[in-house]
Length: 351
Ligand code: KG4
Ligand code: ZN
Image (spheres, rainbow, N blue to C red):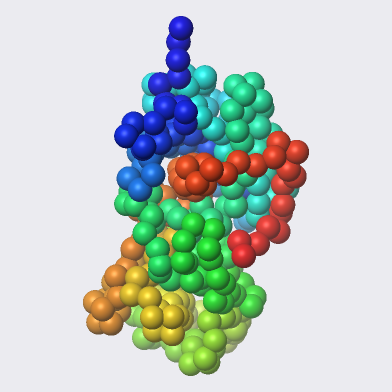
């Protein structure tokens, strides 16, 4: 008889080995990943496939929900097949299936979660509903082991969050943005400068050629004794500078000065959180954490203050399914599963 190679009922010296497939389709990336892992040991990412829709949404300057969901349906099957092939795994070998069920675009979340539930039904294995933000939060630890406590900074296109992480599922929100997310500010300023969507990587490229001290932009709430962020004043200040100086504007200087303001705010608030909680480790995740200047600034501040900085590997910073599979693996190993009747939750909070 053909037994599954890795099933939860099979343990080696009390080590439970689990194999999971996860789908991420909360926004404009369709992604599938396969991970294998045990309690307390480094997980193995056996496959991580992504189909980006950036080019498709580029001409609209942002994500068009209907286009996004239709493209998830078109690409998902091919990504699942490629993942199985790359990992050398058959469908009946999985211990569980997982998908992002929020936050995100409802019609996009439905595609991935329905597919994962169907696989769970067909194989008789459990399904795990995963919060996209928990995927980001845990992503710095995919190629390590998950060792809290620490401060988590999630900086993406939709979120800017500071959390006190005490353990799996034991998260306390310290602060978040009161208006735009950091990535959203990058994207809006990119649009003002006539750059391609998404603005983050484009601004980073141009900023390398500019002087970050050339324009002085506001750093909202920098010295206030809370952990919230605000980026809309910064965005408006960039707009006013553009309107006032129009022809005389130096785009690289402006991009570098804007980026410096974002980095100053993120570094200051994160280290304030570490100081107030007594944590000596900050873990950074989300699309904006791809930014090299941000990584460097955190590293320098970390060296100065004796705080360890753990940033997600570049392949796991932006939306991907490996982070969802990793979160699902930790939860599965902790004995959790979700109902097949559960809905998607476009505004699902993390805490
Ligand atoms: O995590 P992510 O892929 O998707 C969300 O969950 O939102 O993050 C996307 C965001 C976009 O706003 C994009 O402009 C930003 O991450 N981003 C960057 C860089 N690469 C992507 N921001 C600054 N510098 C970058 N190199
Ligand atoms: Zn994301």
